[in-house]
Amino acid sequence: MAENYIYRAQVEELAELRAMYADTPQEVGELTSQVVDRLYQAIKKSVSQRDLRTLFESTEYLANTATFAKRVDAVTHPDVIAEGARTVRVEGVGNRRMIGPDQLRVLHDSRTVNLYPLSATDALRNLQIRAIGLSAVAPTIEALVAAGAEHIEGADPGILAPSNAPRNVGGAGLVRSTGKSKADALYRTLYSRNPYGVFVLREGKVVATEDERQCGGDITYEDMFADADLVIEVIDDPRRKAEIAEFAAEFFPQTLVMFVADLTKPIAGLSRPSQGNHFNQKISRELMQRMADPDIPINPLAKVVAMIGDHLPYEHGLDFLLFGFEKKYWSQLSSSARELSALATHLLIAHLAGMDVLGKNFTSDDVPRHLMGELNEEARLIYRRVMRKRFALK
Image (cartoon, rainbow, N blue to C red; front, side, top):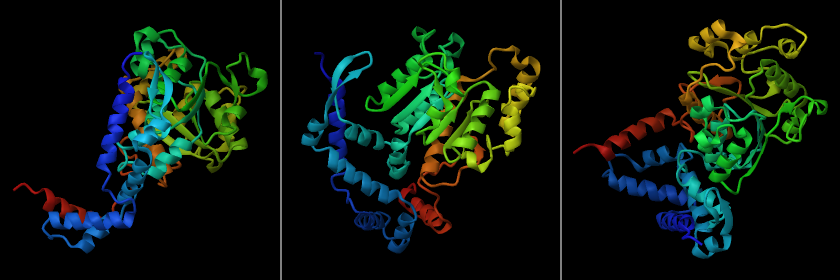
């Protein structure tokens, strides 16, 4: 068998992490005292210890650090690493020995430990995420898995179109994938990110009833929502979009729903159907029912405009006015798909961290950025003083 550079690199970095956190107290009180004392000496006692303690106790930063130090200690001993190691299939390489899931999580968390609350990352790992459509949302799903999501199910009957390659992620964006299944291509990308994740991606449609199923890959709305914590809906048909929203409001009113659109300035929003704020546009239940009714002749593009609201850029509006549904697809930027993935990931982490983000569509301009929480005014002033004292150019 070829040299296992994957396992070697993983073990080496785990050893580095173990050394890095070896002297880090695993209790937040002890860690706070240590940090305050060291920083107090480093800035030559120019800011009081009381103020330094106020600064660090105003955020979850050190609590996160202490918890992570405890996890590093628990899973990075050489004997524990060897015991947890497994043989997995690595895309394009074959079967290889690899560190276990606990060790892989610690490696991934090591890069975000003081930017994402570990409690939010843990919640994301346990979240049952379902995707209705796998095209525009593929980069978002990939970004969520990169952030820690481990349970993804979805369905899409489509194939990878040549013109859509710039918007796709992983192998799905390569020429060799053109004409292949969207579901299979995304599965390979997700598995390559985390072979321990549970990813079930079907080549089929999400349909209203069992009677509409035409192949084994088709799945009903009910089955898609049944055990979901979060449903991301990204299909093109506006009537179906309204129908799914109406279904969720009636049968799964407490299930979290994410609405995304990769516009020139992408938007993402979270809501619960019980709030009656469909697509975060205050569309009434009565109007949603009319939009979902196939026998009521409402212009499909009028439905799209209502769902997007004031966030619709004029370029897309002109696209609608000029071409309507005569175009197979509307103009979309490859960069928008990537911007949307970051936006949606930040938004979901913010929600899991306990921030009040439901009921509004966000852009990159207003999505919460400080996911460890905002400093209060007193802590903010102390922070500025400490930074000036510690990093002043001599």
